[in-house]
Image 1 (tube, one colour):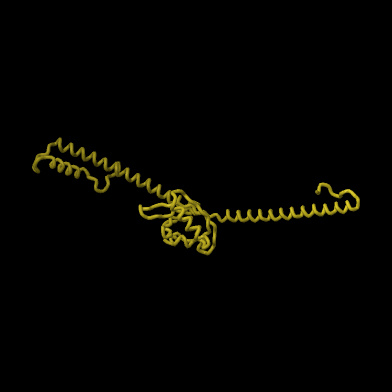
Image 2 (cartoon, helix red, strand yellow):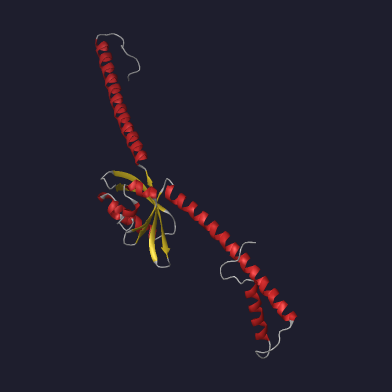
Length: 236
């Protein structure tokens, strides 16, 4: 068994407490203590002391487990590929993980208490305000895509998934998951450009085929005037 915690009664202290407890039960402060009474109270106090020590040991174990769980949570929160932000009603960032700070190109210490809406590209500001109103009107997770401006002026596309929450029973916050989708947007742009080019060439090809058909018709018409058979078949 572990040593007693500071303040836990030792043997001598137990005896004093036992005598005091028995005296309180007797009528009169000068009552004689019987050996059996004293032994019974000492036993009860010993059991109580043991229970306290067991409780202290359990509290230390739980505190240790909480510390481990907290460290694991902080590691997951800070180093997940997603950026996590909590934004107040006045757009101030009240909480941020390391990933979000890296995405935005700002040290986390500088990010806290800075205005989140000022990070949004000016042409997408209205999208952000409408999005916040939509989130406030539902309990479900909502998402939107818009452009964000980093500290160095670089603009990148991001996906925001957010939900509304109340912290400390009074503070309304927007909990945001931030994902960098710049690579996906580049791919979408490249695909769109390739499709547009294919459509253009398809149109050019169809135009040439139509012109060739017209020329064949003209040749056939000339051959008919000369009293000869059509040069080209299946052009009508």
